[in-house]
Image (cartoon, rainbow, N blue to C red; front, side, top):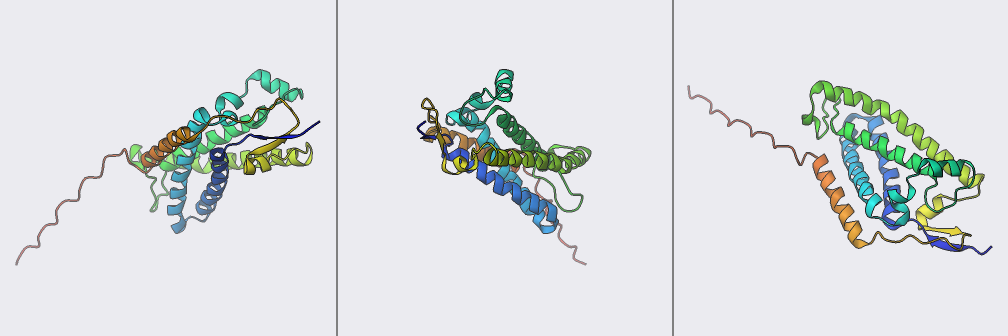
Length: 232
């Protein structure tokens, strides 16, 4: 059967994927080290908030295989995949569930981190929105959620290795080049996700970063004027 090359992943989707990988490594290292690096931990967390916001919008306005409507599976598609009857491009049904789970736990990690504190010198940019008790509770969940993220990432990597070595289907290369070699003559290249869609998603992401850094919070009151020293 003849093989043809089909564009599956658009450039914004690929950039999101690899930037998220780099930033997740960065927040893990800075969070583990702590100390002065905790400031960078917070900054990288805000950057991840912007990335996740971009992906959320891109899931509605991006190209074919990046859209949630295309890859979010129903029970029928999951059953077909488990029976070996599913065919298609983009995320397979179980892979789609893995992606959705990663997006969900990463979003929670960002939101909890924005309101967290370390009881020493660091407070998240949205710390003022909650009480100290709530911030402490979210901080604890923020730390525990690292294990869930790690488990999902490990599962994600294991699935990729399984596809590469057992099913002989390289899932990494298309996420780099955007193109996949397929034997289905009816396979359609991704469509949509043009410049206007990219600008819309970028504006939403920028607004999220602004809000995540406290842009919606009222500015703190000015300090009281200094009292002149009495002349004795």
